Image (cartoon, rainbow, N blue to C red; front, side, top):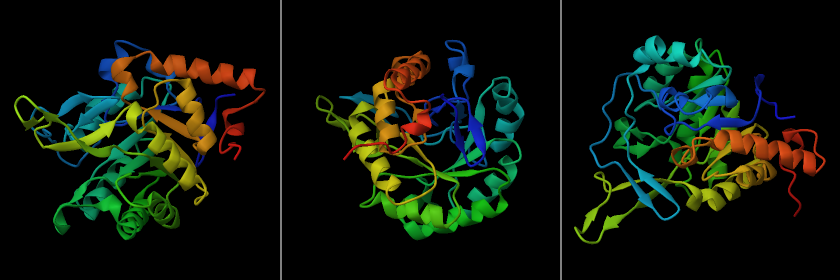
Length: 299
């Protein structure tokens, strides 16, 4: 009933832990059973260890959180040696989220990681240091170029994670599909800012950051729906999913699977509750499978 398939990879259920909010699962494993997830998208991995941005780098706002963590991670070699064996203890698919600061780094990461994981999620929201810090994912041509090159060297399916901070996200989706992406995931965080009126200083040291949480859900649902009209590859929807009703919206808009992120900070049991809620919804409405919901919106 809950099984879904993305480019030949079968997930026992469509709920994936979103990258960046779940680390590598160690902390959450003390609170919940990681076997509940259909998949886990890892904290963003870079070639070398990164300390991330200076504190404060996360703040609460109405309806969500703003973060500018800065890709803190131990680097790809440490991930393979120390974190991957831990994740393999669980009955869940492992999705490596990769981050590069130029095309060559994405290619190298894909070469190294693809033999070890079930899928790779290419995060194209990183600044291109060779081009003055421009975000790769805002340019459809760059999305096409990097996706094509990563796909060439990867032995596992490739998911391209799209940024919402553009005029038309469907252009990015089409570019990814044309370049050979096996799936797309959307949306990443929305650029945002908050100010402490007493100190008159930004609440984030880097001034701006990425907004996640329920405040962005209607935007995310709209973007999933728009992309579903334009591409034929599977879509993994995310952005403010807090309960099973939110998840159902994403399926109806066109998502094959979903990722949950910010909700894990608020309610570690969310995966169990969302899973149960989806099952009950399917039974109550006479659907045999999650696949029956995908794009099944009545306009």
